Image 1 (cartoon, rainbow, N blue to C red):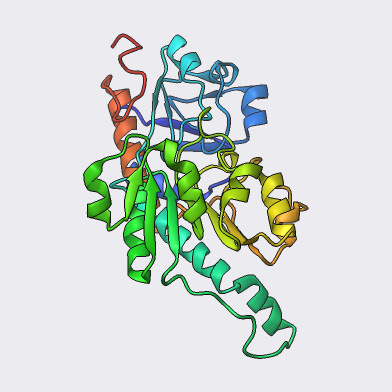
Image 2 (spheres, rainbow, N blue to C red; image 1 turned 30 degrees about the vertical axis):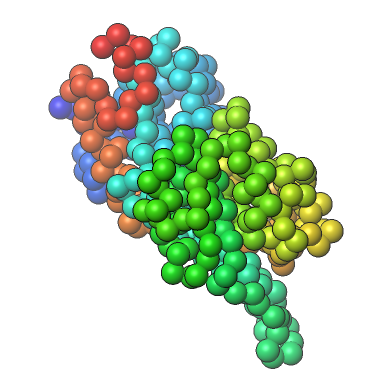
Length: 325
């Protein structure tokens, strides 16, 4: 098999190179800004979207493209219909089994604790030589965590929140009756129980993919439904949460805080008002960026590259049948 030619659309997420080459040593991996790809084109068998929008026009600029392979699970940025029309396979690497779900769940726990213990304010206080013994934090024990989405990440999160003595409730697109018992949750309901979940959630965790049904699922009305001083943690997709509504709720003191790893526009403007607040813990889409997660994802990506170059169906290919293969 010839050396695989792989292009990554964008120059962020630099650790991808290290882990993909570790899993597929003979791969030729180029990281190129999307604007450059559109202007000058490129030759590659496989394209990794990262967080870039992959449309038909961009696919047409990649000579020899056979597979659009997501580094992770989310495919909402890929025009699957355009890829199918061009006989290009599209695949992802689901979160369970790679360490990605577990890594994102760990980040969610970290964010919830950081907000509860007012970590940004505590760091500001000690650097300024402020009064010791402040600020007053809040414990997780005895409070209710509402998990919207119980796929791999949501389930991994539920298992990690249980030892803190939290009450757990959740939503699943198609509720599994046995899931609540297995995860130690009070109940698992369908999307129609969102309002009920919001009313009870001291901590709201967003763990669903972005779609036409979930875009801005947490808007002004949803935020108004939460208990006073609730906390929101979002490591899924920025489009799930209205940032303007969030800023208003924070400014009015209705929420204790928010933990955000994803944003409506990425990269986030450094001048964003979200970054100037001590009640917001913000990171740059790194919830799943760990050695464990990247090593697991790299194995899945490398396996699919080998499969597509040998004429076989990649794992988790969403359009293989539509390609008529």
